[in-house]
Length: 255
Image (cartoon, rainbow, N blue to C red):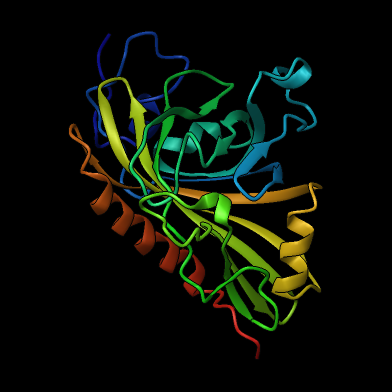
């Protein structure tokens, strides 16, 4: 089959499109390809359990063990084909995916449409707000819990930043990883966010740990493209840079 020219817009989907029978793995990821997803999760002190409950997703009629589903909305560049579709996301826990430590969780995110692209999770950094066990009296807080203590996280700091704003509190955490398509790889950065309207960080944290269903949103972006993915530390820097760009436009404050 004749490959499409890189100059054509169609190339952004050639890498991944289900209608192309021959692999397009020689085409690298389009830089700044972005994917926005949302779904439901139950948050614990040491785990995130994603739920399989998105309306209209046939995969979750019989939920796969240890996986939840999500709905994809904004999808650009190499992710463009996935806009308006569903996918699966792996639950995570501190025992298997410890914070501030390099690891590999293949197929962290996959797509119902096809298996042309999968996203591997490799690093979750610690939160960067003032540390507190319960966020009492703080407008910006990173919770800590002794159950999270590892050699690379001796204070038991969580990945979350709880930040108060005029409408409530936003809890967010960063991720870094690798986007895979055949033999091609892309450096992945992203941020997961849960909003708590009308609550302080202390109230939001208590609600989050109550074992109830919460709705999250996430934005993931390919920030680099190469056949050999950099070590986790450079990937973390790109993830942090992405996070700053994503939230800079809506900086949290008490004003």
